[in-house]
Each structure stands twice: as structure tokens, then as C-alpha cells.
Length: 143
Image (tube, rainbow, N blue to C red; front, side):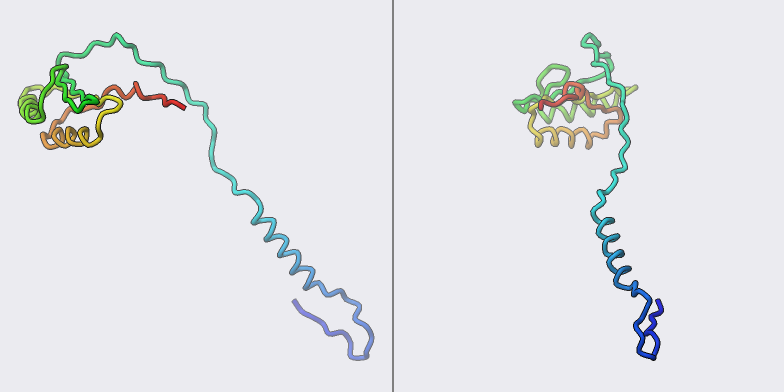
């Protein structure tokens, strides 16, 4: 912006000095930009609700169910076993053709360390058909 100093003849300057006005307007503009709430980029979508699973589903005979109880007990198709028996059972099922599916279902308050230990045994045995079951029981949480 060019500033004029007026005429040299001593007469008063007739032009308004807009520099302070522009400075104040820029400060106000910056203040308004800062105080505007940040727009959230969310889109509300009404998703369909899932239907609860039926309780009368039968277990396929080519699937083995491994349950970890709250008392750190390992159940193989309902029968209690030890961790060393689990290793031998997994090796035996690995040799079967076709390999049966292994379903793992820890109970609600099962020990995390024991569940991690059992999963480590399963991982080390290189089971190719593995799945977690019973997760639908914990789909809703208490408020």
C-alpha cells in the first residue's frame, strides 16, 4: 500500500488512512476463523441389525471344539485334556485327510495368559483350519 504524506503546503491531509482499519479487520477475521468449530467428516448411516444366531445348530462331526474354561481347564470336544495331550491331538488331526477344523472357544472369564498359551500351541502345530466360535455371545455389552 502506498502512503501519501499529503502536500507540502501545510494543508491538512484529506485522505483517510486505511492501514489501521485493515489491520483490525484482519485480526478479527483470524479470530473468527479460529473460533469456528472444526467440521467433523462423519456420515451417519443406519446399518441393518443382525439377527441372533439360532441355538439349535448342530456341530459338524469333522470339527473339533477346543474350550478354555474359567478354571484354566482345556476341553477337547467336551473331554478335559492337558496341554501335552493337546499337542499330540493337534499333531494327529494335522495328519488326517482332510484336516478337520479346529474351533476355539474361551469362556467369558477365562485367563488371558492361558488363552495365549493355548493359542501358541495351536500356532506352533501349524493348524490350517482354525476359527474362533462363540463370539456372538459377547456381541452386546452391559452398560
